Length: 315
Ligand SMILES: O=CC(=O)O
Image 1 (cartoon, helix red, strand yellow):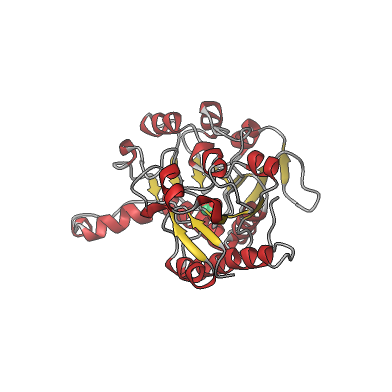
Image 2 (cartoon, helix red, strand yellow; image 1 turned 90 degrees about the vertical axis):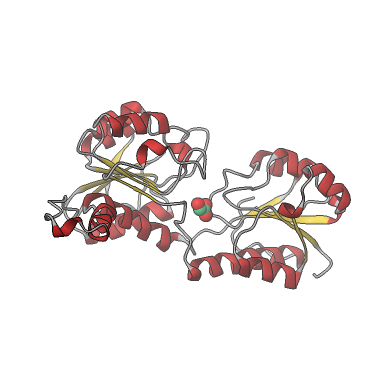
């Protein structure tokens, strides 16, 4: 397979890059200083049969159109929002992603964010480091165990978060397109009702046209001044302007965010808020999971080019 042209869209995990270099003829899009079209002209765009993208740069219509021999997009991510799925379908291009292997890490981080916000872990860490403890005790935080948790999207990751929150004695309810027959949690067909009824609202669904800005002013106000919003999905799930003003005005109790609307830009108004915990989109970024995701990308590519079934097909 060493002659098969594979295009990586941006730097990801070093191990993935090494594996791609070992098994395929790897082209790196970020090594080009010119436009994509120029790059592909000089690097024989027509020899590239696979694209490996991620949550930053996937495969949009322009990239797909400039690769006439493209057969497969193997994403180093579970999220598919940076891939033009309609175009892929139209052109018969296969798509694979990396589900399952990252579920535990993302769910763990969601719980970490809840604890971080409610127990003030980052704020109290800073309190110790800058020597304020010598002057006075930190003060009281908020208990997590036993709270009511609402989950937006009860897929793999949402279910893994629910399982963890159950272990903290939390009551679980959820909103999704349809009621899940396997789930023993209270189902809401209306997200406002879910937000009204829970203390912690966690966004864990895929980003689609229907879920863009699913967390709007109405949902934030329904969650209320004591409510906590956790987002480990995508930044665009939340109307960020509304979120920032709700936090600044005290209409929302706090937020734990791993994702933002214009990454890596983060609204600076959030930097001074002790009831907000910010992460730089690292939900699945552990050594173990990143290696597993890379292995899955390689296995999908190898399966495709050996005419075998994809391990984790999307299309
Ligand atoms: O955000 C992470 C992913 O989609 O894998």
